[in-house]
Image (cartoon, rainbow, N blue to C red; front, side, top):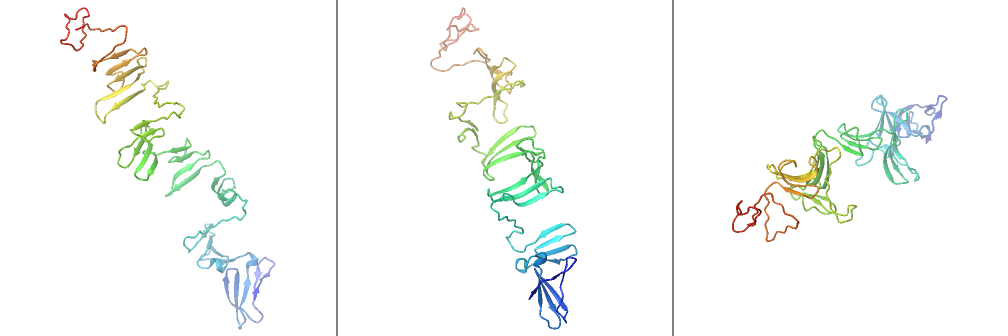
Length: 352
């Protein structure tokens, strides 16, 4: 029958064999100690649950202690080992697809159930918890310190105490900062690996938006709720605060350059630009150049006066000039009749 060990003054328990016999062997099985006696005495069992709820058994080395809560629960290989040299607790399982550690709180009003990690002074705390009240999972840092994430023993991302997230940087200056020595990018994918748009900054500090659909055809950027029908498609259905489709190019007070648009075909030599010439009273100009003040073809000033730097050809059946005065610096005006005027036939403002 099961026996309870006798308490001793020093806090230990003493186990004795029956009268006229001695203990021939001992066997530890979970919370039960089995005594095999000599002289054909019956085997006795000792319940150890009353002195700690478990049995401690030396492990494979002098620095390891194996723990078994009972034959039914921990049958098989070692379930838990505490390495006293490394001060490390190891949980071992031989069953596939099972968790080695389960933390459960049966109180349905508990909001912090799980694991709490603290520093040596209990000042910095990190909790991995589940809330029974909100049914939410949490990775929760309590102090104003960074939280780092790493793979391959290398930091990949961190969250500062102020909430800024950095990828490739340890000091993110905004809510999300991605940094790299090559070309840091942010990719939005519709179909992974084939249809996506990259946002990145190159080494010159240029912001680049690059849509790709796999074949590099029919790519476009839409501003507004519409599928782009061009490389850049601006759409406004009168629901925005602006009330109309509009593209605004504006130079700042410290900008000495010209707000303009330029057009160029691939690597060709011809380039056309149009915009406001900041060095010439903000006149609107069209030029065959990458700048407005060179090779200017058309100029319109603040009074709507138009200056053409080249020849003007007007084609059509009827051309109407609705003005009080038509001034022509040359004396000759040719209007498509039988012969071209000369200084003699058109002298004095004649028209042929």
